[in-house]
Length: 447
Ligand SMILES: Nc1nc2c(c(=O)[nH]1)N[C@H]1C(S)=C(S)[C@@H](COP(=O)(O)O)O[C@H]1N2
Ligand SMILES: [Mo]
Image 1 (cartoon, protein in one colour):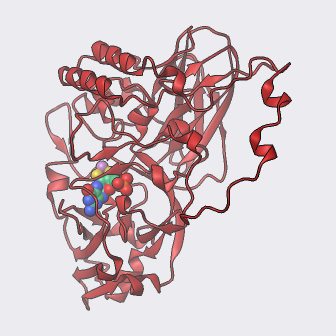
Image 2 (image 1 turned 180 degrees about the vertical axis):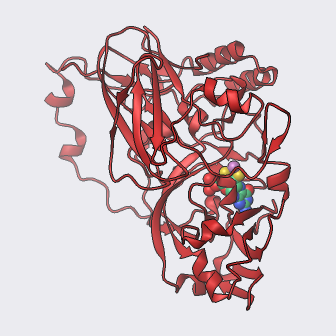
Image 3 (image 1 turned 180 degrees about the horizontal axis):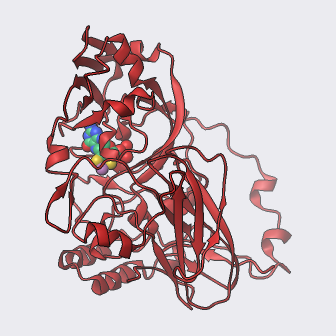
């Protein structure tokens, strides 16, 4: 079996000159020009991808014949800074601002490098970020969580009090409702980091919110809605339906991947609302109010609404529908020769488990069922893969996920028939990556 080699995506799209060019064009929204600008930004750095292989020919390969320094000398002593870091050779694997968005001094979104990750867990230092008013590193000894509204006994918890309660740990994805939002306008951003990188998955640890509500004697019957409020300057407040909370799924979480949450992700406390768009996962969580109707806050009436074809706004569409994306090979990467590739990607559903993923290498004409890597968990990322031998001809890679409710991820045509073209949020359409004869992989949309 001939094994193809893949050049990693050029990661430094953010070279200064490139950005200016790109943002000027993004404002005009012209796709061709934009793609040209991205290509210009990427040129000259294309060789900089991760593990460039020197191995041209194993006969006389100096990497076998010469004993390297690290086999002869004494290695370094234990790390003195007490907290491990990735290899210096992985310095390109970073979360980044999208070159397609206007760059601001107070940057508010960074995208996770999905093309560089394995399995389903996002390392905490690479978790995407979305801050409406910057992030803070709050002193946990001063942080409080208040429970009020339709409760018998309003309560205030310290972090110590919360962390003494029985906890659970669960794997869940979080996806910003605006993930893949640029693609509505047919603005093809170059890599899956920018098309799908407002997505991450962690093991979260915390106390089921229902436990705290019971402690406060909340009216679980008439109190049909909750207001969750964050302690940052964004006045982030969201209505959470009690129906989601009753099952015990919604967590008041302090843990992320075995350690405390990172400050960027809401340290010391955030709400985890499995399956629901990121904005409801209120960070720096300081108050939960129990009420009997939706709160109609700014972040659910003005923002985070979907403009429909008939001009109306759809509100409270919180669930992230079933979606998937091929992460390797994906936009910006280069197939260096013909042969075997493992086409691999991520699938998820806000309604439950991923039931199957089909992959097409011919733009959706034929589909083959992909392998799912277990364990497949509910409202969690699932890794899929498919064996593929590239014949050197142009190919279009797609993945189509189905969840355990039977819902099938739509094509752009199907999605636009219902939603029109003027939305920002909730784009779960099938993603297409064009593999050109040169091996270059590009983001394309099929009509
Ligand atoms: N307090 C507070 N909570 C917040 C936000 C915020 O700006 N402030 N942003 C929300 C949005 S829009 C998203 S997508 C997620 C992002 O979470 P992350 O930064 O941990 O990835 O947090 C949500 N919770
Ligand atoms: Mo978001």
